[in-house]
Image 1 (spheres, rainbow, N blue to C red):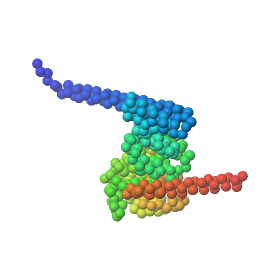
Image 2 (cartoon, rainbow, N blue to C red):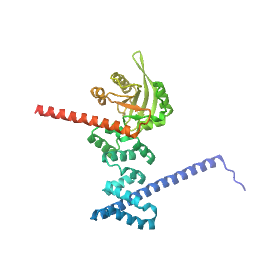
Image 3 (cartoon, rainbow, N blue to C red):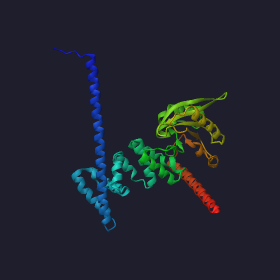
Image 4 (cartoon, rainbow, N blue to C red):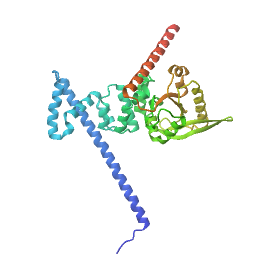
Length: 360
């Protein structure tokens, strides 16, 4: 006797298969997370044990002898994963993160491959920045390497903010999962994926961004989504158009972007302020933060930007590069920006101190 498969049975079978598949995938993901956490803790404990042994040694080169000797024995018993190179990674891991509870927290979110890339960053603030962004945004190891190669840390915050402020914002991200604008905004933005040549119009730039929207949103930073192009604003009897309107789900605010082919001009501030106030009045939803403005230009005059006090108005001015410059040139450019920023901060602190002494 042959049983006919009715549509109802077929639908139930499809639903059953879907449910079972989902259970298997979730179990595998949970198992992978558990295994990763266990391995990460194991590697840290091995590194900690080697570190304690090395610290007890008195002879120069004693640490390397310990690593080579231990690796020879462990490789014979447990394979290449415990060779001298990996043992050195474990030792470095234990040197960078001394507290076991910190390592345990990291192991729940980041793989050993993530951590192996990060433990060789000497600057603690820079390392913390990438750790928290990896955790918060769920970066793959490939994404992390791309962000490192493009000097995201330097482009995001280092050239504009004091170390104390950055540390406070990273603490808020770590403890309350609150992502502030200063961890999202960059300067410069690298738009080499647009494929633009030396001569192009503003419309060409917009068209290229829309063609490569996914890459553009990734370069913009965490949590951005596209809302509109040439957003029309009617004010009195005049029409105005915002080049690009985005929304950031982490910041919970609209972000207006103006594209400029030339250098930043002081008049650009007034135009963007008009856009932001219109958006706040007509588009901002309850519970959202006030809109932000980003003016992307090919060059900017830092003293004008400082005098205009743009940070207080929610406007960020940044350069964009349509070609990826040599790393050495980019480093030089960013280091110059850092030096200028720190000099301005020190000058402000000195002026504030002098004023306080005068009042006393």
